[in-house]
Image (cartoon, rainbow, N blue to C red; front, top):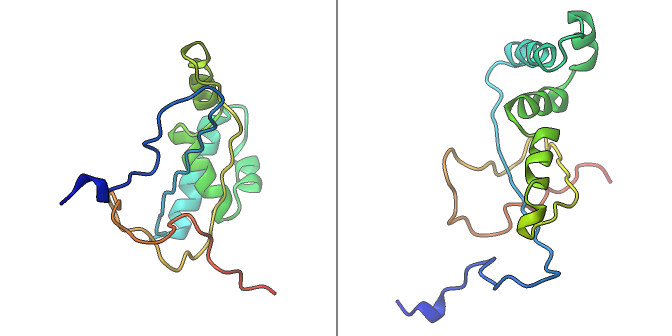
Length: 130
């Protein structure tokens, strides 16, 4: 196959002033909601040693709270932002950060690397509210 037929998103040469956005998507299936909620509350206590179990129960109450607590405990947090800021001297200035939980994604990604899917895997599903 002719290489000219292939185009890789992001293969542009680096240039000063270029803005790079990295969109990451992780899909999860909740197999035991009660166990996940309990685990997220335990992780909250691990992240906040001065918190009480009652405070963790009041703070971690829903799907978004649980998944963001798990992700924060796994390293998606301010420490990651600080590690990225360490690259300023290398010519990379960290910008903003945003995360969003989407409930009941109609087309979840399969386990593993899914680099051959067609379409925009970052498009949000249509809203069910008018």
